Length: 386
Length: 223
Ligand SMILES: Nc1ncnc2c1ncn2[C@@H]1O[C@H](COP(=O)(O)OP(=O)(O)O)[C@@H](O)[C@H]1O
Ligand SMILES: [Mg+2]
Image (cartoon, rainbow over all chains, first blue to last red; front, top):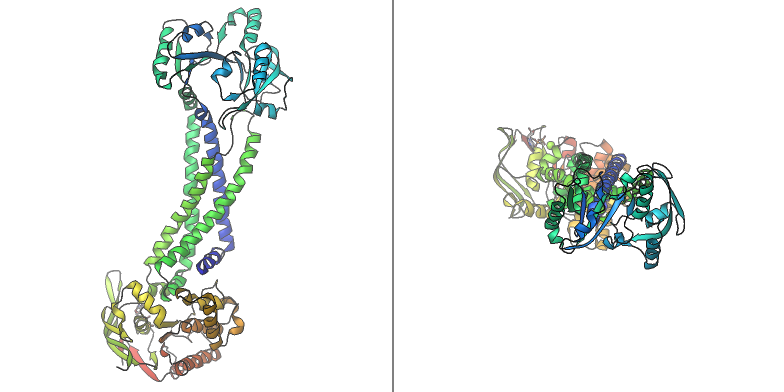
């Protein structure tokens, strides 16, 4: 307990140096936490994806539509439980910076396939009945202060015109990883309008979501679906939702890989900063360590003395960093375009990772100085001139 | 057996890179219990080295050293550390106090290795500081004390464990005359009143006069 006091006093012997080191660690932990948050936000879609859902899209590209008529053919395949579909509508809500997904879906089945979108029976029934109604995620409702009965006006871009939807349902996310930023409305409403204004675009959907009975059959069913439409004008590509998400990520993942890498480079840098501080401190105390050894203190005592100081600095720095990373991530969430990341928050693993890395750095930074203190003979310690 | 310290045919050399520097050459010395001996000699003659060997913070290359019938030169590192803690009190030229600890805490430091309770430690520390007349400076940090006062704190730290032997390496080397005299009087008192065997290294003839016995060292040999 006296050793603790000595550790504490040693740590704050050079106040400025210790302060700068702590600041450095805190900033690095914040940067690390922020980067990990971006990385985990990026992968949130993959985590949320279900293994018993297949996505069937146009083989050439996601942006080409598929005929609505494929639906019944897919539904007849063995092992398929339900088929629903969606169409990317987009449009401009308020202004171009509001990014959440707006999808034209099959009102009758879509939520059956996405049970993680929790909607009351009453709201679901009203939604199904009213052609121009829509359902929105709780996050969206909160963000735009929308309530049941409100009208959302969207300027169409892919589908020109001014579109008005009445909010008839607000769904809640079942899991933390569930995207609560979607807006869903009747595909049939879209399709009717298309039949009138541009009949060539009618009867087309963006992709099918195929719920299967047994996730282990995903490969067979996928190839069976794609086999059905082989050599047709619109060939399909089916894969699990997870693979679909990952494929989508792969195209943009160079940045994420870089971030992932840099987040660990940061750790290396803090290690050097703290390591340097510890080496300087231990060097200056060479004589004092010799005195302590002379008085009968053992290597174990010196290890604690040095390790304790290193850990104290890294824990204070890491603690301050963690304390600030929450408001800073929240601030970032405010400035990045809405809906760009459906889920942008610090996940527990980021906290665990930051905290354990801070401790690890504390230990690692003490190794060199400890080695030196143990190796130095008493007589050489007394002869040492800093 | 009246000799407390026996140095028998001790040689010591230091390795520097590839060649060896001989420092002590087949040296023998014995010091009786209760003795106050001064080791004198020119700089580099091996005084500090001899003192370090007697105090068990270094080992001879050849020969044996006994202190109170313990063969110090044969003890291993950790046994030696324990032996030092209970048998030797150290006084250095540059005091070597821990700057972040108060006078009280510096004196208490060696007691942390004992089984004494907090209140017992307090008693011992206060007694030791009383002997060196610094009871009123307990809560001062080294940098708030004069050189002479720092050295007195160092002496209190050296005697707080009640060791058999006090070793002092140029204890007055960095002090003005008045402070030096105070230190010498203190060492004399510890020798007379508290029956400590004192081995003091000095190159100051005035300081050496305090001792009962003066031995001269030159080029690693007693002359
Ligand atoms: N730890 C050491 N490593 C290498 N050389 C040393 C060491 N200690 C002392 N010496 C050398 O041994 C010689 C005697 O040193 P020392 O005992 O300190 O002399 P004194 O105390 O009489 O001035 C000197 O030449 C010194 O350089
Ligand atoms: Mg010397």
